[in-house]
Length: 244
Image 1 (cartoon, one colour):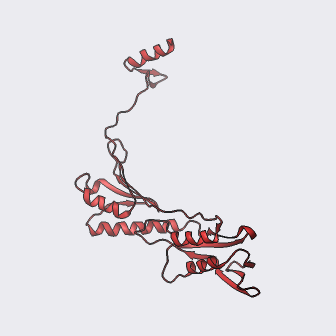
Image 2: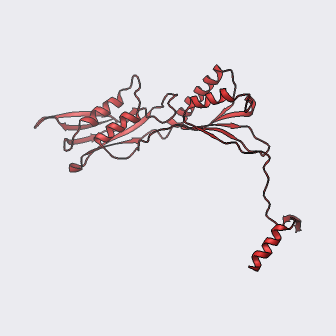
Image 3: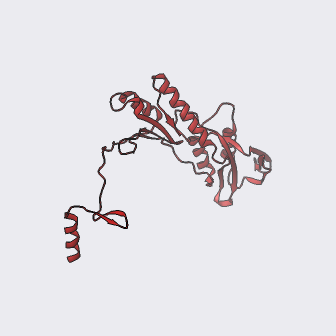
């Protein structure tokens, strides 16, 4: 009780600078008063929304030389200010792409795998790897895979097609696919994946995809966003710096 009262008296007293061994200290905890009020960030989910916001607010809330665009990740873009009087940047817009998640490396039951591939991967002209995998995963049934091999270039499974007859089904390995991994306004970067098939007997047939490009797609995705933003800004006559 006495300690609390003493601390309260110290808080109410004027702050003083104390010199100890040539160093300056304060007898109270000081809090810096900001010169600039923080900006309320607008959350969006598309690149088009970012461009529309800039078009609507240029010369109203900010000037062209007072803002810049930051490509944070393949799924996040920010509209930020230049340094203010507090040497901080205001975030006017935070755009995050709304993507569903495909869990690479997870074993999916064949039917669930097909549904997830249909909804999370786009088609690309001249590439039919997605169609091959979908056809393969959609036809294998529990107990239908009798032999399975992988030579590093393609995977081959011997699948029952009748009571006694067998047929070989082959899938490229690695396969080149185009998942939805960035904003829908830009081309989706493709990359290599390893497809694996697992026959767990009574548990059923399961399928899985493993990433095999070391994450190089992220740079391509950010480059695609950069090209889109530059093109859209050029059409409205703005030259706003873009960093990534």
